[in-house]
Image (cartoon, rainbow, N blue to C red; front, side, top):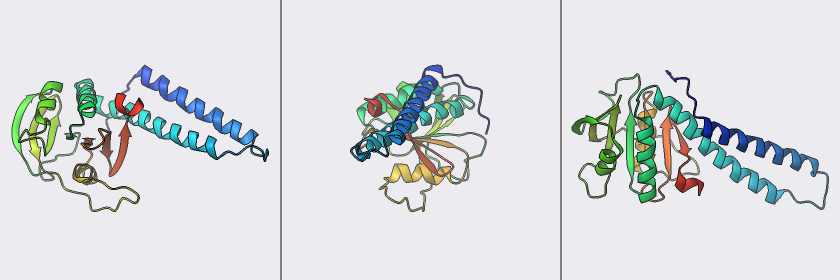
Length: 207
């Protein structure tokens, strides 16, 4: 990977504070474990929920690190997925890194335009003929839209995944591309990398 040295200080501080909070809660749980009058089940549930939030923040932090090495428009991508998430407009965005994708995706419609949040949002607006496929981004450019990605054949235990998520996983299993997914049903955002799906913190998911 070509990750750059990134300094997303606010996100890093949030991550550090969250990890420290969980550490303190776990230490407190150990201290009261021998007290039979104290039930830890509620506390452990709180810690589990906090861990899920921290995982989401960590995913956002590392996603920005990964993206910043391959596109100067990573902040525009973050803005775009926030807006798509808020509107619950489903989206599938492929960011090409080192590996060629020519033989892995079924090419859609050429766009060849500068990457902007407004253009991405327009492509994924419900009813747009291009909104069902994947957008391919290379560098600072939207290369094409309505691309078809290979679907994963893996069985994800405990999760029911839609076509967008299965397509994101399928492509990420075959190459080093990063694939962003916005769920049309929930508005939740995630990204696929190396055959794994990671949640991303957004204003929707935090609040």
